[in-house]
Length: 489
Ligand SMILES: Cc1cc2nc3c(=O)[nH]c(=O)nc-3n(C[C@H](O)[C@H](O)[C@H](O)COP(=O)(O)OP(=O)(O)OC[C@H]3O[C@@H](n4cnc5c(N)ncnc54)[C@H](O)[C@@H]3O)c2cc1C
Image 1 (cartoon, rainbow, N blue to C red):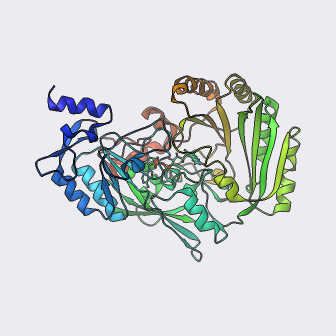
Image 2: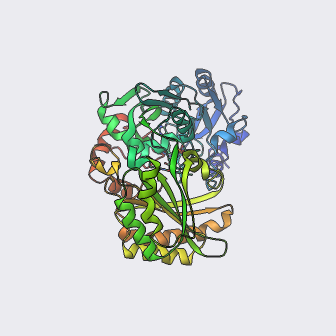
């Protein structure tokens, strides 16, 4: 077997970086090389001396497969993906990120960018390329006078919640605290308070972006407004975000809320949809539809009222009349109880699959699809994220994120510790999604992996403007491990 052929097949199996025959030792002499994969998926080799120089240029660590810390750095949240980059640059500063982007571009190396690693389709790592790991860049600074929080590009949502709530301030973060702010913010950012305070993109005042040319660019209303427009919904297509600045809002971390459990029925779901559309912006009601150990199909509604508690109690009264609750716990509670409550059940390393579909209402037809599939397939879970409110008041072309008319986001999810069941379960989830599709107006790019064509269509009239930003900030499509916006040339 020729050496190059051997390397190629080994890389396909995702193990090239460990092969002595491909010479990857970080202490290697100038004549040795590192086997890697190019931006377009070809086998390449990189002179070890260049790798050494790159490592020396970093304040953080450059890791190969034999280095301590490599495995934890490369690991993704979704256990369905086990990718092995040739190199992991664990950056600790903006300058490190610049060096890493420059190295990837100059070596024409496949490049993945990881913040929290929660990409459902496993896009934040790669086989044989360079992974930029931002995990060490997680500081959050709160400015109580300016009412802003500055977060590093590797911050997790829990870091933001903890830092801001300490000042009785908050910004929209998602429902699991170990999710990364990077992917979350750049794709939209839904959370339990978004109806009141807007999506994460609505609160993003500014960001620092290391573009494909290795420049650090400020993206804000005043500086590079086209980039600022594009990163608010366009994902990591335009560069690496090393800093996010979020608008803060007064927030009482003790909210009125809790859980109310009902039996699943079509009438209940349509009634839920009607109520969700009428509630004030302080209120969020999010159902989780599941099968209990006895096989009964249930709906647990998570209630958050981010306002005066007595008013919250009155506002939520109609929920308790939708059907007879099986159980009800509503009252004063710490918001963090919700924000961290699913951290373990949606923990790292299990097998996950998810489809999301945005809807404007729960029609009788959609309710029937949900009840039918939930009754058929106990292991499939589904839920709704409650949208509308403040996000619906923003024009669809105000920024790249465009789905302003969505009232709810339907999620269809598989969670298992057993890889052998996934093919069967994924097929069921896809069937469920297919049957729900006539009721769906688009999808949330942060949750679905779809074809390039569907991604393009999902941005609607905003797509040409995204392509123009891509042409300007990443014409060579260096950043393509994401919901990819293709450059025009
Ligand atoms: C358990 C769980 C709970 C979730 N809850 C919510 C929720 O409540 N609301 C919601 O809106 N979404 C939610 N999501 C979806 C979430 O927004 C996406 O999975 C998001 O991509 C996660 O971001 P991350 O930084 O952890 O992901 P990563 O896997 O690190 O990155 C995802 C994508 O973003 C890119 N990226 C990440 N950081 C940067 C950066 N700093 N600069 C440039 N590109 C970057 C990556 O290259 C990759 O393409 C959830 C996902 C999971 C798994």
